[in-house]
Length: 307
Image 1 (cartoon, rainbow, N blue to C red):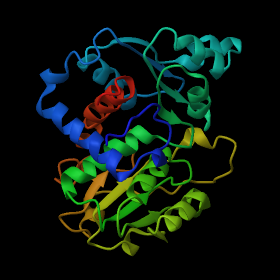
Image 2 (cartoon, one colour; image 1 turned 90 degrees about the vertical axis):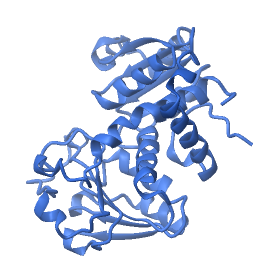
Image 3 (cartoon, helix red, strand yellow; image 1 turned 180 degrees about the horizontal axis):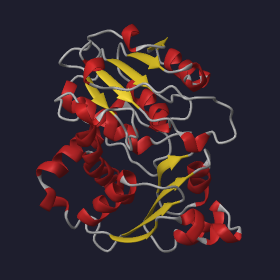
Image 4 (cartoon, helix red, strand yellow; image 1 turned 180 degrees about the vertical axis):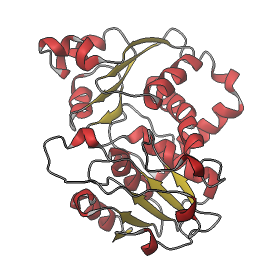
């Protein structure tokens, strides 16, 4: 039985079965784009972005256009919408739902997507909620991992960088924990450690979590090294001192196998050297491009429940 999608709010709303349905649909969209080119004809998708975005906003908007939908959009809703005048998320969503058939929203508040879903008469797709979650990113991440590893069981995955504020990591580990014999290594400085609630989630899901502080502590047969930038915008009022970044470069990657793939949700700053970009294990551009088919599948399944 196909799993219906109403809203896309958190990663833990998905099962292995629902992920497989989305991945199969995304694969078919890549193979047969014309088949879906008018699937959302006469539908309208609203993109409300209260924080900056390149890949998420553009891939969602590309997805909508490739499905034949129209778009209404604000890319600077924090300064160019009625929020500036004091309007609440509730009021913005209730009004926008009267203009569109689905709303894609990014907002700095952790609970923003849940608030929106409670009052919206149309599907809400969470495009990033503060330092909480980024479920559609996690779906495209797992989709990318499946492309290079095929089997999503028995994986050894290192998440590295800012594990405290990295919403992409928070969603990714929830999805990876659905699969058998998953081991997650958390590589971070002390201040940026993975919050305990996510460690508890992994333990409850029978996944292994191993915190480390150096690349040398990671196994050389690691399957995925998922690196992230320091989320400076998330801790303006927190004292950190000098930030000692982990840098991935050709020298670091000599320690890992030819099957250790490097991923990054982007944007990167300096945490992955551009010298590594031509290495076949660097799949972060492929990862970014996978946002289009995955978000096409999510839009279609949320708006048109027949898929």
